[in-house]
Length: 336
Image 1: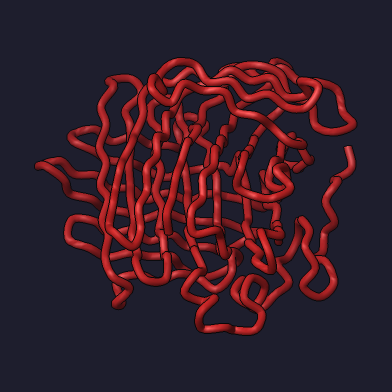
Image 2: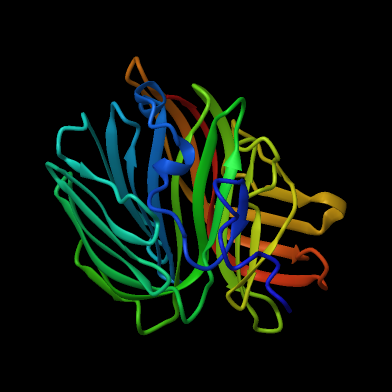
């Protein structure tokens, strides 16, 4: 199957998706090309990395909203149904570093009880190093995610309302190695196959934004490695970052619709594509949720984790049956 995305960035600052080198000096030059101070205050940046394993799910992110920075780390023990989470919010006064591009640099955060370093070296690898302390419980993790041998990341420069734009890099199905220690338990990710995802985003979004998001990694019934990234409501075209990776090669997925019960989010979710080229059922195992109101910014979200089953059909290719892929879904409202 031929890769459907071009391997070089569009000419100039044109919108589009591509694999291969990032091809620009910084993401800010794409989303705020004039360097406007006012528009700069509206730039939102985050780097999310997730690890999926038969024994655990780990997620972590560094978030920079310009006037507020934050980070979170969570891990759930899928076998013993234990959960640890730590979130911190601070002003942008040297506590946070955020890389200029998705290819190289460090996204890091320092706060009492939480340290998080996310290292970027695409297309070769990424890494997570974190330590959290909360309510007498601790978590330590050192994880490496290999990109070049397994997955081609996709870069997308996307139009927003008016003259605004957003840039994002996505990769699902990265091979993960390392260790995670929480409470009295240490899990060696190298003993069983662990996979990871990357979501590096820098954009100018509406003051009030709502979106649904899903990502997962797993195999189809024929043993092909699959990864997915889907979203709804976030981008005006409604399909730009919807991608299916087959044995590491990315293909467009088209628009999707999420169906869920916001009042009962632990009920199964469903994700449908046009003409049912995507038909997935997500069964939650647990969830994290928050409702934060800081005045100038507010956020309400639910993010269950669990397993996906169903069928996927990248554009122009036969359908594949997904068998118990592991991942997360999200329903998020932000005033930022």
